[in-house]
Length: 81
Image 1 (cartoon, rainbow, N blue to C red):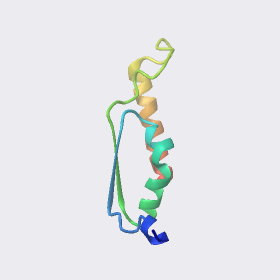
Image 2 (cartoon, rainbow, N blue to C red):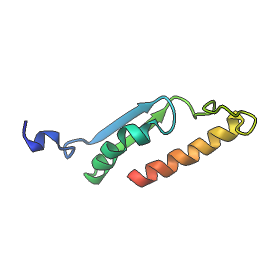
Image 3 (cartoon, one colour):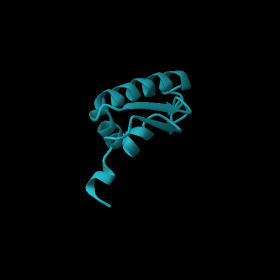
Image 4 (cartoon, rainbow, N blue to C red):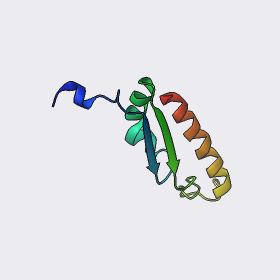
């Protein structure tokens, strides 16, 4: 393989499907940023809003946590473009 075989320049669209918000950040943010730098389109789909991802549901009821996780997801995606 040559270096060009690893390039994302040929990627026009990238679809990431994740279980919850933040999975994309630590598993594919570098790839997403590279595709965006080359002018490609990136779409992220999450199966949940992360609303049940706490061990303290009294402090973080599902609706409140979902809203926070969505804000974090948007901020994360803003960073990668």
